[in-house]
Image 1 (cartoon, rainbow, N blue to C red):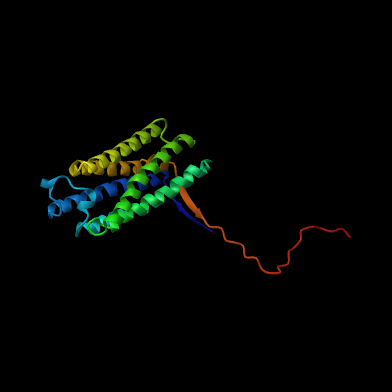
Image 2: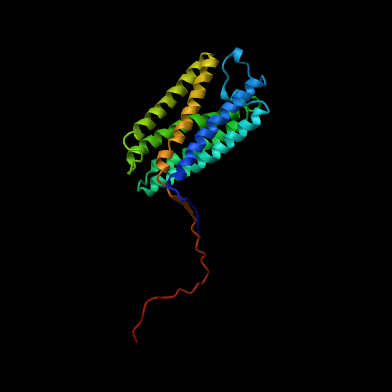
Length: 240
């Protein structure tokens, strides 16, 4: 049994990561605009964290929905990327670990949206760790796999670009943590926003790899049921 997804246009699958990047980026800025307009955050007190903007209704509902849909798309994108790398002949444990990390990143994204920091801070922080830290590790593995997989879609520039963006994401989270420890919340929040945008760009960059996809399939193998005392039919011919 198999479930297949086909497209008449080869470039159509490239729209999936692009949609994620655009949808998530627009979504968090809409939440920011709503939080500022209804006074949930006060810009005179400093620039707010993303989660602070999405902590209170009505924008908390949109925040949760945006991140839940984003998490679903992340899972879909990570599965397709895993299959693409494997089908190119790279049967690597790094690819399998990358898939697991991608799932954890998606789980963390959903947790951030569903457990607001105003009510479930500990769970929210665990989700943020999975979304940001594990997400960065996932893209370091993808950068490594970019140089391992042939053909390398995007030519010579895709590897360096993925490396630079992942490095910027790593620097962003380090600076965010440093400024949080120094109680410079506004500056830390700015770096959090930069980090989120970079991660969205990294997911969107998969459009280069997906440009060459015509479809993908999920295969399910049925387990053979063994009947007790089943008579085995021999295919050996005996001469008489």
